[in-house]
Image (cartoon, helix red, strand yellow):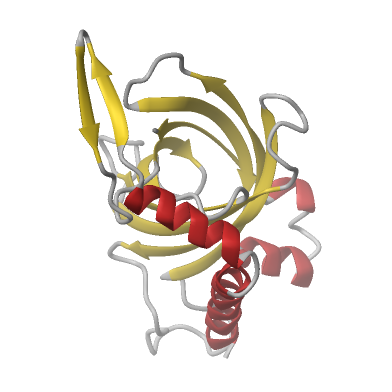
Length: 221
């Protein structure tokens, strides 16, 4: 029952995040797509200038992240919707040779990130927060409890809701090349399971449930 509730909450939050930008700032989202689809851009390599027309399905940024409950290391690609919402799809890996784990864990994460302030309000620093929906696969993850587990004691551990908060420092890259900016970010994240344990037991405190991650994002022209 708990697993169903958690999945329902995850789905609802994802729907609201998409709906808010599908029915909210329509002009900004529409303009963002039209700019990516219709306006030719120039790429200067040495003395040569190459004109190209971006496609809407080409990601606007790429990221590499250390830790953060998405594996030992993860890589991702995402988009900029409007000025504040940035969804990114990550793949993370944790294994014996890649993180020192006794099991191999593959994680797919849809990270929904919102900038908390208008661009430039705090200079190059941008505070942000959001949530991820993680799908993990290993030899001991399950969507439904095996029959030998006590009823209502454990809940599924294949899909998790992962709230996070943090900030990013962006550096502008001069020139008319492929890259526009580079961002260096740090975030604190936790799992829905950790929050549940914090609520129902006195042994898990708010200071014990957070995980630090660091990463780099490259923004394309």
